[in-house]
Image (cartoon, rainbow, N blue to C red; front, side, top):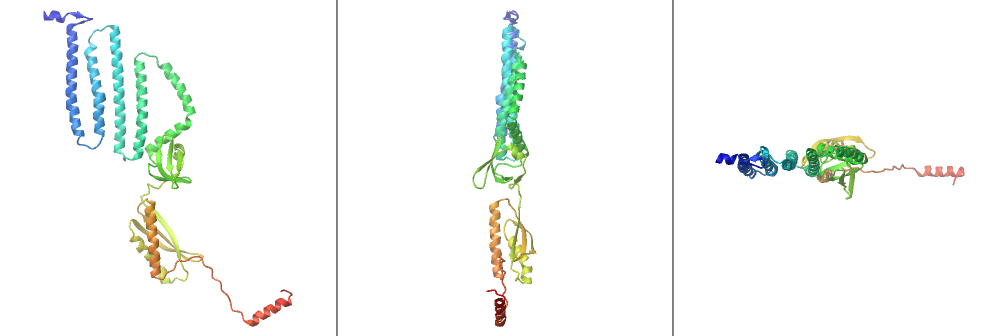
Length: 368
């Protein structure tokens, strides 16, 4: 009796075929739920112990893309052995393809975003990289969805060759019309991956200087010392010589000063030692050298070289100010005078007779 019932044919299939499909569907759903509770549950407990957001993104990717794909696969396997009406079969195949493609695109998008976030985590977590990812991830998402839609339409039987050919011709026209933009875009990627500068860096480009305020797809903006905003095309920056002061681990400082020619030999020999002592007692400095360098028009010139162990310009100026003040204090204590432009005029002594003779000679010559 039971076997006869199982052999009953209904809508092109026997009852036993429906039961097998139902069993496959139920067992598959049951296994997926167990898999979700065990694996995803353990991953969530592990993620709760970490501070990074990457593991949370991985769990979200599994729940949003992988698990639904497993459900769709289980449903498709369950009904694969059933004989369906051709129209119904085509509808189910199309719906399965649509759902599977959408879920596959979401999975691929999640994988790309996860890869970008992993790249950001393994590199220096700077604002420049974060800003670049904020621009790249939406672009990658759009590209993946576009390719996924083309793949879906092609598998649904639509003739997309003409559309692709039209897009190719239009793409060439657009590329020619936006050549400058594309150059700036490629320059943006060059700045992103090569990183000649980052947000906050103080750079000099030609005659312009300022702090990097924004790095965009087409332009990069600097804030100058006087307050105005300088805007450069990315192509101009990648083709220019850039001086990046933020990357300077230490600043080399060289300056000169002069003392009077009347300064004694003993004091001249003492001056380099005085300068060295002052520099070595200052914080964040390294002394290099101090020499009596040359004879000037009105001074005996000394040259001093030292290093400030920072790229901070304000710190450099504070240190130079301290050095100048202490140097003047030491010179005053030792009665050493700084030189400054002077002019000395010497007058010879003439007696009264010589002056009279000179005047008489001028009168005799007819000169007043």
